[in-house]
Image (cartoon, rainbow, N blue to C red; front, top):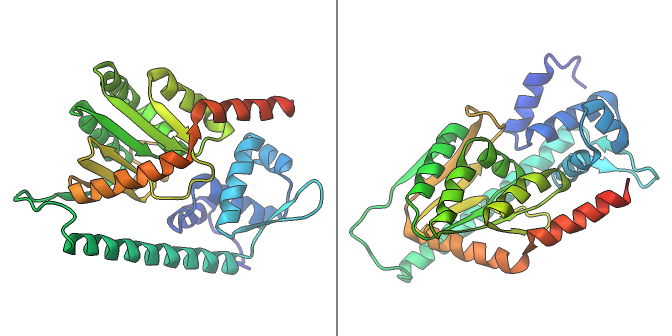
Length: 281
């Protein structure tokens, strides 16, 4: 084991760059330093809700970085750092292989001329901060004529609420536009999702969604996450591919519709979460 972790914030930053969210990095470091604990003690130590702890633990277990005991109450322990990092590397390798597969599919579609050639050139750019992403999103929504489709994590709708994206979306709906979205709704995100429903957005829940994060504007312009935002401030780093490539947009629309058919209405999910919450009171 390391003789001493020089600085917790630096260690957390390294974990985030390795693919963990900020909450996952903090929780994993806490378990490494203080040993196995049940969710109730973790919530108390980290000064948060148990629902938030459960959600973060689920993410860490999916990444192979935390194990749970069979005893009651359940105790969670950090997987040894070397083993956890090796597991994370293998997961990234699998993701890269999946991207290569998708690349080959797109190339094959191009060869078969599944889309009409155009004299116009597609543009691509990388958005590197939450501020850039918000500015581009608001601009795109403002010029929308038809529909916005989105699939984002909980942090995405929090950013939309904090930095004016929801205001632009409400104006789109008021002028006759439509917005459909998919999210893995957890107890901690009920209020933010309800705000979208109250605005008139059509939102659905997809349980344990782990697919690509993206948005499509009028089925022409699209953004997809290479790396999700590591925080909620305007300067928080993010890596998003932003393009007006129609072929990629059509691919994302098809992907969205597949997940849409397998998802359930947000109101139904919220009602179930509230009933679960009341049963624990």
